[in-house]
Image (cartoon, rainbow, N blue to C red; front, side, top):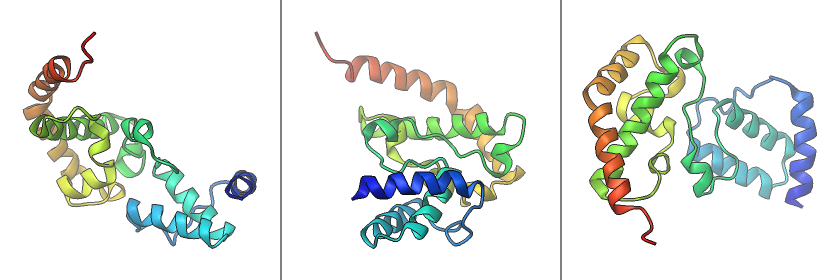
Length: 167
């Protein structure tokens, strides 16, 4: 049943083009995931299509497992979509912040599984990714300058010493 729904939605999704749903633009990642599940349960293809379009725009995964969580990236929206270094700056800060948490916890799980970029943005910057301004970008740059090299080196050492399988 779910496979039929997804197959039908895929065709509808291609035909829909870039008509994004405004209803879900302010929803959190958790709310979108819950709404997607509810739409599947209710067999509401139109609502699920709207939700999936919003999730795609945010570069969210529809079905997140450990592998998908480990490859999460910032969405290319707002300032992060403009040419220049903003996307790389945000990506580096996101990864560094998550690596720092893994170091503090002494946890070998991949860093991006700790939180989505949206959660990082709200927690660290106090704004959703689509509202990141030049002031928030300056904060991300300062954070990277202060932390990136030391955290990356410490995290690499931790992973090599504590998280590798012993033969």
